Length: 137
Image (cartoon, rainbow, N blue to C red):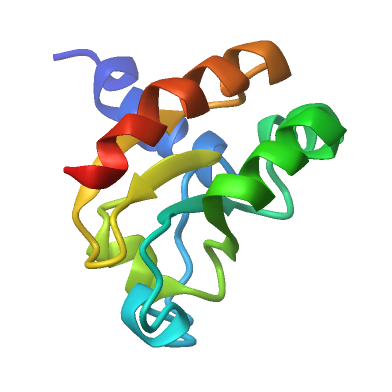
């Protein structure tokens, strides 16, 4: 086997880690959905990001800055912006490998939907419309 084949996975891993698209932190602030939302019946939207991730910055500058998106999230969801580097427990609980990752759960933690990557505002609003009926489960 050629040495380029054996070093390619390592090179890819290093690129993903250094660009912030792959989380490699071991910090843990022990934030959990049960502690943050006692008694809530709303779907929880976890936006998991890294400060060094270009796709995360794009998502924040477009979709998560769009007033229509923010209004929809405020009305029907519990929005949690989670830094992957400082919330290792949640990242591990939901097996997050790449950022940005959007995870929608019931208050008990049951995952309803997961989207990896940046999502345009129009597509994100459609996603919210698809997920909202799942609240009743």
